[in-house]
Image 1 (tube, rainbow, N blue to C red):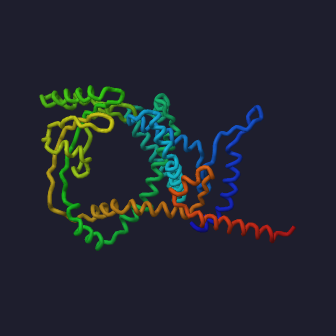
Image 2 (cartoon, rainbow, N blue to C red):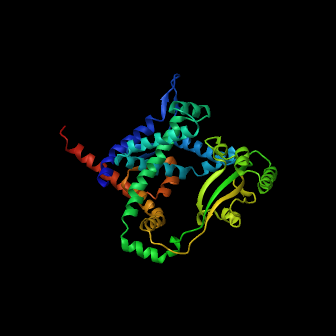
Image 3 (tube, one colour):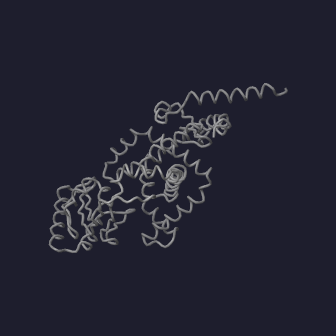
Length: 375
């Protein structure tokens, strides 16, 4: 990778300089210069532009709005963390580049198509073309949606292959057994519950009224009303803008009790199978939980090689992933424009002195080449 870094340095400098001047302006019909974009960072042979940052900002604002945050507050919150956003885009670009080097593009594209078809099927849509049409009708850009999905899948694929998989498979058996003996409680069988929910959103509503409605539903359920029917009629949980309860009757899934959020585990701790909880206030509404099944815990620890490997991988992967990204950054050519350098560079912990030396070395070599040319 170091040789790749050196070979890229001069070309990257020239590309960055060219793009910084040329790609940011167009000649209007009247003859004046008009700014249309701005190069924020050079990442090896690719660039991060202002339009990319704005697109990502818009997506994050929309996500916060869907969580109930007012638009101006959401915009202020995202803008406040713009430097973090740019740093994230730089890391993403490095992972995308690495994915291409590993020849993952076709595999990732197949997964994008599979997931899009899965969404179409869930919505009762028969073709991708009709799905695109439905997305546009909902104000979503299919091209942008696919690119976002493509980026996320590529990032995950690179990290899983380059970090998690190597960590998982590289652990020797003696280390697995030592970890198991030191953490036996992790390998006992925990209590498992199967849950359903009725979710009532208080977005745009009076919170007291929503809670009162939740209490009414709890009273009906404890009086013998059918949970699935009430969930189908009342639960407001959505997927891609469509209520899901009419199809799944409020089913949520199977969970190990230790993995549940503390407030949920506390709320259902004493609820018997078939019973419902009191309304639980969460971030965006009230939730009524029904315990469909319970499986008792066991205190006997059993050694299972794959489970121990998974436990160690989960425990160590955050640090390993951080080190992997650090190596990608150290081996890459990164140049951040002056307007953003002071806020973004410290977040990436860039070795600016090393980059400067590399630039000087490359410039010197090119100067020597020119000097040795015959007139």
